[in-house]
Image 1 (cartoon, rainbow, N blue to C red):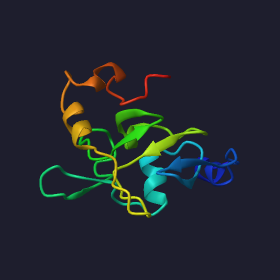
Image 2 (image 1 turned 180 degrees about the horizontal axis):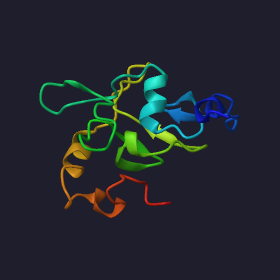
Image 3 (image 1 turned 120 degrees about the horizontal axis):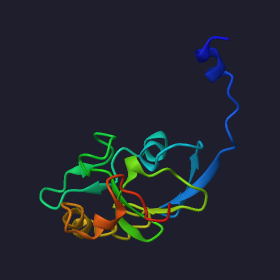
Length: 131
């Protein structure tokens, strides 16, 4: 059988939901958090410190640091490099619907800027350190 046809007929695991800023968002197993946010129509989830320009998924390969989120309390993780898992709680910089301010991601931009930041022990993949 043609390998492409085999993929089309694949039977993926059942989907699940994760918590993104207090809202349930559907996940297809194997999706990165960046892909989950994008599929949910969330194109930007934080802003730059100077100018307040929107940021979200840009390069998709962990180089640009535009997709930083907090996952299960661990800040400064690249959404494009983290696979979504059942039970994940993701906090972004998006304003809350009830008017509460967004999380302060200014410090996470500084932390992710280089190897001396707190993210240094998570490795190049931007992982949560629990793998």
